Image 1 (cartoon, rainbow, N blue to C red):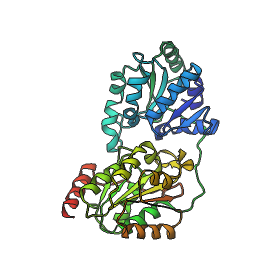
Image 2: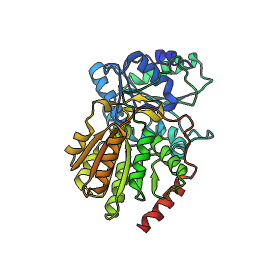
Image 3: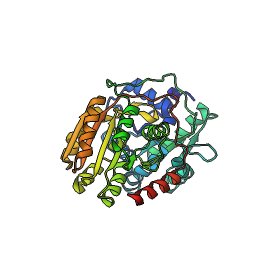
Image 4: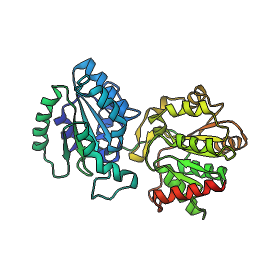
Length: 373
């Protein structure tokens, strides 16, 4: 189905969401039509944030917003759905559009397997009526379902469309870029060299994939690295847990801007505990690159100032290899919690692969390595 017709049939005037690769046609369409005009389209920090924005929109206008997300975001949205939107509380309507990663029977990455199994069950548990959209869905079917859904929306109920892979098609495919030149893979390489044999916790997405391939290229093992394939936004908290319990070992965290935005409260917890052996490196390309490159709000965020305000005693911001090498050297010598923002370009090698070890194999190798330190 053409995404233009999909949005016409939904008939909504405001969209908010977190980008998803299966919803790339929708994301590109919204960026092409509205950009990031906050009156029409807001790319939010996390899916719960989106649900709350939809609530505010309804309170101000009396209309229902569209909230789009990958199905992994259902968990972030459960609380505001159940305690804010639900018709036993405020009865605030919203239209959820959910990309179905890990659909049973469709091969996907391990972090999507269980989430894929419970995607529809989660909606049923939340008592949200839904319709599954696939390649065979025609406009008439969507129109009939939307007519039914409008009756529920008018009663303060939420509804959902679950989008299978390839169900939406778009005429617009945008190429996203920023003004930085340092490539993320080079930044990851420099971080891995600075870390030497220390443990590294890397965020979900392409940074972990690049770290894995760099280890392969150098003929190194993978036991020093914990590759966070899911739980977006929690990488620095995992690293904090390691650092607090291995106080004599330098622990390096490779975070991402989209992930960090999702759970910014982690900065405050990191700063309050302030382990002197943790180096928190945030790779910032101002985009949700792994799912297509759509912009996030990082362009407007002063991450070093944020980290400083949350209690990080040492902060740096760099945008070139020389500056990164210098900051990493300072972090290596420091005995205080250290934060480095690395401003990078959007983009990755077309032949970038994925880890060839399983998540459980990665965990066991990393745990074994930690017992040796």
